[in-house]
Image (cartoon, rainbow, N blue to C red; front, side, top):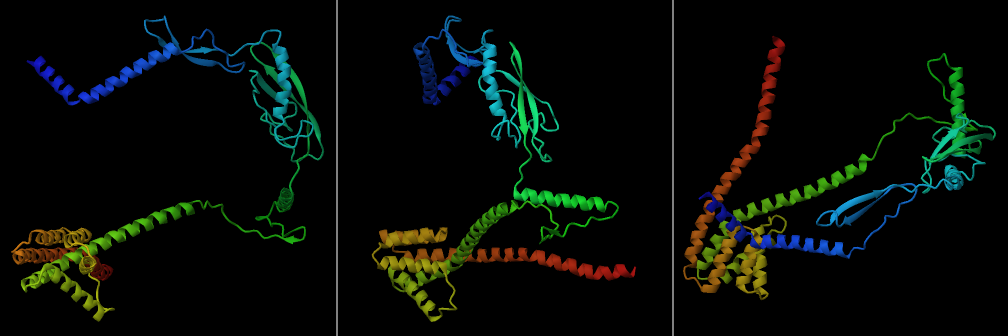
Length: 415
């Protein structure tokens, strides 16, 4: 029984995901075919070219005959070795390149002003370079040149050892270290540092050191200050930009909420007016035009005091569309869509239905809608009252705390 259920479940799975399984199987089949064809087309390799004297090389190869199917393997070969009769010639060839590299920014080893570049290898020779300064007070092991205090050129040398596992050679590289060449700015700063050091030495027993007032006839002014990283300013600018963007979006969201609430408040009034006009014998088109005209007249009578009503603005836009040739059904549908409210979409649907089918009991439908709208407006007023009371809770709590503090502090002071 269990085997039968398992078989049924497998068959159901295969039936449900048949196309997916076919795609996966086809992909694996194509991969296998392409791999076999690629291996078959690959050129037979009988040797691996070495990378040179300085590094090993690894080749990715398919080996046939090792197993039943071709085997994918990474085969590495070591760097090339020099013959005994050529290793010293290679070291001699390496020497000028090593010296040329070591001079760094200097024009030659006969005029060394800047630090040397003492590396452990050069080119593709595969040799290890070892540099040993004769005078470490002038040249350090890392190539740093100490020529700040030199008054005249100094002759010294570097011992260069070139080696590998086959041979070792030593060479003396003569070096002439020149006095440091200072820019005008560096000269002035060094002179001022010397003056400060002189004043420091003279006032060694004093609590403070008086700084020099002048340098070459120019008055010096010193100001205290800490190095401050002002990179946070551009970050602050980006943060403010994001906050402004969020503020604009939040303002748009609040404006939409205010617009929706205002339109919900005006909805029962608009439905009531439609019902009155339709009940008086007007068509929906005439009633719509009358409501729009009444709103426009009220705006003209009180241009500065009249509050903009979003629902009436959309109603006037719809009236303008109809007067310019837009079909009524299309205009009503656009009205409901642009109001972005379920109530107005329902009203637009009723008006569009009346336009298409000529519903006889339009007045009764509008009356029912009006009753529901006024009930919804009552609920909206209740919710707004609850929200207002909730917002007043924090100020009331703060006032309570202040009153309690005013009462308790004198009582505690008299205890």
